Image (cartoon, rainbow, N blue to C red; front, side, top):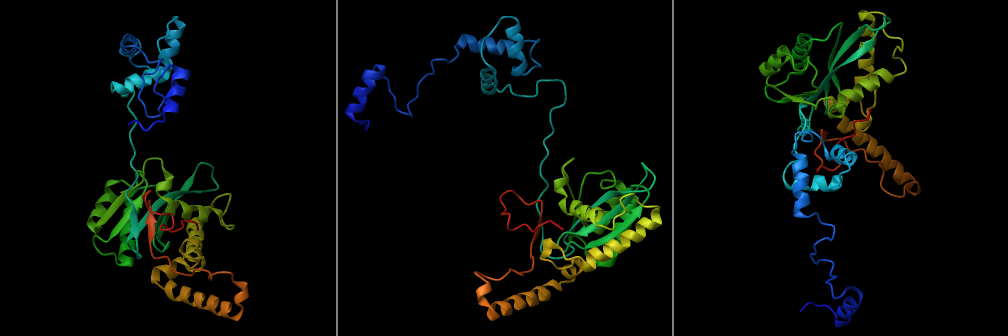
Length: 323
């Protein structure tokens, strides 16, 4: 009935006076706290002198008085069983931050990312502010401005100009940003509502939730031509940024979209270009097949770009953010 050999039972009898030694058997631990000790722990936890303290502090304080009832882990186990692991101090409990919803772009002008970054000047402590809107699918910098201050009004004016230039339809665009005051200003929110644009926001103090804009700003500030000592004035900064944007959109081969320019990707010209590259590789393999041990390089166009992908999504689905 027990599916245990008789010799096993005889061995248990000799070793431990016939105690049940099956792994799945339920036994009461010899060091289990008594009901009296459990009640003592509960009384201490709820005592006015200790009700705002954690077990890590309660146990040492009791030891200073020559009292030991149970370990910190036992305190926690009892509190968990009695549902007493709530916030115990007067300070505000931690706010749970939920990851932003996954945004998927399969064509230009579906998902944009925008942010503001500081630009140093020759005067220490004085900065200029670069406003930049990027198309997540193509990585194209669709619009930018530089101002001497941060404001929701400047961001709204820039957004209206970009939407007019790109011909954005109502309720077809989502714009992701962080939680800065310009991003949540009344003027910008009203403008987005009028344009039928859905707003998406990062978690507070989590830069990884807005990676495409962060990668863009890193590229901007680490190109060799970037003035390490800062810009002389606003006009100089605007002229330099104009040249950078031209290079970034029209010349720069972006790794995240299989080494085509953002403008080519935005216009859909990458499909034919990557097809031609694949034909070059296939022809080279036919001429000298010994140089390839497997297939040629994958020149397929990036068809799906994911912002803040869910944990369940495969890493191969999300496009590379690197620039």
